[in-house]
Length: 382
Image (cartoon, rainbow, N blue to C red; front, side, top):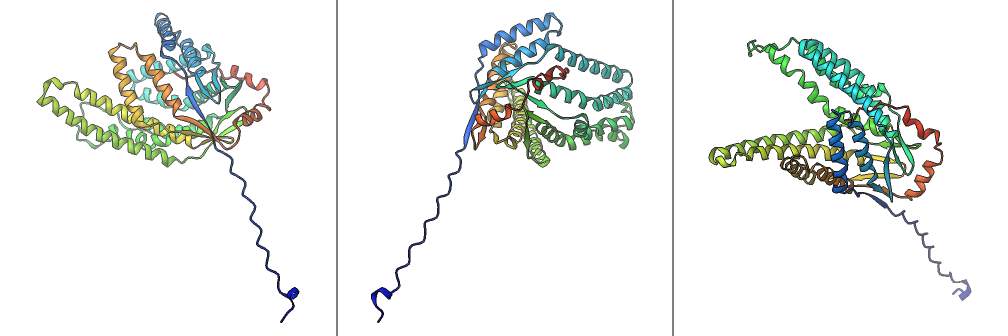
């Protein structure tokens, strides 16, 4: 028998694992809109009066007043957006747009093929003007005295809309439609429907590519935005929208049958039509907005958007009737109502301190870099 001191000592318990560092708390910075319908009504009514008596020439100044008010009342992280747009730049862009529209209408009225050729030329030029407009709007928008920037180029913009050029090219190549031609001729049907096919096939692609083009080339100070989203997402949105529209058309057919039995229900089909349009428009707009924001980042910040297409569609539907029955006097109320809802559905999520991130972004930006808005002097937004 071994002496007591020779007996094996009990094994020491294994050391406890070091505690894992706690994950940084997710911080949420919601957007909010503080605009008031009565305040905005005063801006809107003056803008409307001056635009009418100046035959639209005052509309750029009206847009600046409206945008400044909407930006100034959009807040996130205890700071609001600011707009610094120059009305003369907007006037220049609108004169260009009006001139292009007049040229297209005159050419199309007297020589349809010439009108189509003008349309193709305008579509080739349009990306340059759109890029300049995006640059103008970005650099004239600021947050905490730091401006946004847009670095997109014409060639990239042309690639975005290039698929839609197939529609006017087909119109130009195919023979013109003659109403006196036998409607059973295949060539007549081809001239009518073939140009529509590229538009239907590529419209979701263009919307998705345009959203990615906008976000990927946008920067806040020196910090670029990023987005991770596939084009297939946008095709899914518009396929569902098309199905909703078809279902709506069926329901409209039933509503029309109601009038056959009850003549007093003559307004039911009109209500049904407006409801279908409001729901389809709200669905596409809310889904495209949600998908775009939810896939976008700015540094450590992730955007979150949760707009409900049912709520937005009902809002559009009510807004239309409110505007119609008040002869347009409730337009300011409708604008503020939608702006407040959309802002309330948007937020920025961050694992770190947003204040520190914003301070780091603003340090490398010189005062000279914030004066580039004078260079981008064309704005086509209407």
